[in-house]
Length: 92
Image 1 (cartoon, rainbow, N blue to C red):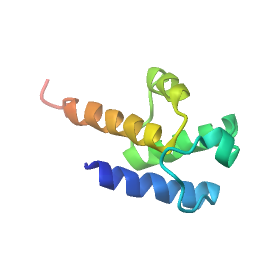
Image 2 (cartoon, rainbow, N blue to C red):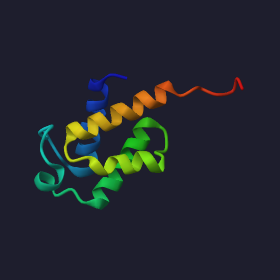
Image 3 (cartoon, rainbow, N blue to C red):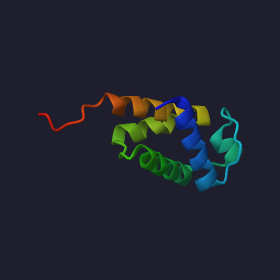
């Protein structure tokens, strides 16, 4: 999955769930859009749906460093890469 595909989905989530249109990728979510902890949880749920995979406790802790949309894109990109590297079971 490309960064462009990730970006498209994240921007769609922000539009649908938070009514954020045309955000700046480096805008501080808390300051500019008044993002709070409830919004962060909703965003993580949207990311889980997008990935079709539940986030681990450690992955959720990593999300606490997110401040901007670029941070979200970096975060989701790491999650995608980690999942692409996971074995696809059944052969053990």
